[in-house]
Image (cartoon, rainbow, N blue to C red; front, side, top):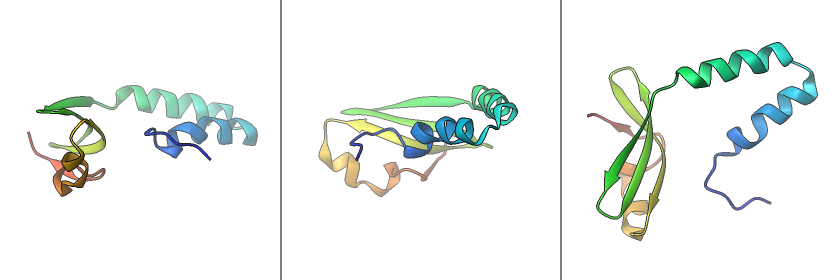
Length: 83
């Protein structure tokens, strides 16, 4: 069991693909990840990490010292933030 803030898809994706032997797919997925635009949005007590999705940003994660930030629906992973 892993206790981490990193999504399990990021931890296991390359390992699973390498076991299956899809090396060309690994190279393609790595180049696609490099093109994704990430942004850190500051909060009074921490940060939100978001990725660009068209004109908006989608929340990928949150790091905060205020527990109330984690309960805020606007900051939950998958939420859309307009800048």
